[in-house]
Image (cartoon, rainbow, N blue to C red; front, top):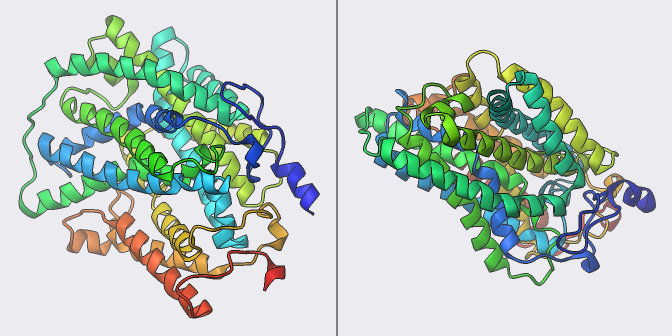
Length: 470
């Protein structure tokens, strides 16, 4: 069993920076002799993928009629929501060096065989995010080199698929160099917007409606980075076990927050100037020409950057759910499915679909993360991952899955999307949305109480998860 499992989930892997080997290694723990990597890579791997149109158009939502918070309150929403989501990414990212395991695979310690549910949800979420981002990248190529949309989409997906195929080290290298390229391009865009943007747009909502709009805008901003929580340790698992957890925390928080806040504030300042929520809208905003062309290149690169991470993490998640397929092949499958979903998203009302997919692809993450955090604390950060690849030896941990489901269901009344508006959102919160926070608190508390009842102890003295150990 173990040899067969390792044959599927382990394999060739990088062992130093700059090694462009095809990573066949999957969700199996990274051995100590393959641990490497300097700390600055944690910043760049989280900084680069957020410099994308999805973040820009989140910013523009601050002035729409059903939010209407204006510029300065919008900035406060963006900063608050991004930091809340970034804290989750930063905390979970510190677990990579300690365990050598990715985020969803690590959930096998907590969920046992029921990890199938969060694993499948994460896989589907990465496909959804692929599709959201790919729309902008495909359109940018369509405008830039005058090819049909579907060809532009094919180009984007092939490029991101290659990065996802080669895996961890190649993506770290790409994100490092693209942090410089995209950073410079967005500096140019920022300079342009300083002169033409509306940096003092007043709030159009008032009273209770303004409070509700503030809450909703904060949650939408949080959703942009909270989703990274289910990826967090995927990109630190190769780092040495003695790497400073404090430094990983602050570098992760800085990387994911600075880029997200930057691009969303640009969108907020440009909200009244963007003619449509597309790459063409950004090009038009910048007046076309060379500057508009640079913006399209930035969109193209940014799309490849963020979607490669989706493909990579999606492959680890599906393995964690029990799929006995080598990691590179799953990355290709994710890319192919995203092609079809992107074509659908590109029809009809993109803005509505964008917000709905954004939120629904993320609502499950907070209760899931809370349960993992509680389990990590109960085990005093000592987790046995030595036989994590053996799915048949895992417990069927209903307590974790039940807690996650209860957390999600408790959050439903507090949701606000165009598909569904919860009773608490409409009656108590003036259409604000606090579903993330409710799900996190309820999921974590329910799981803690269930484990306390089962073990009669605040801390679990046995971090093992194998059936043979009970």
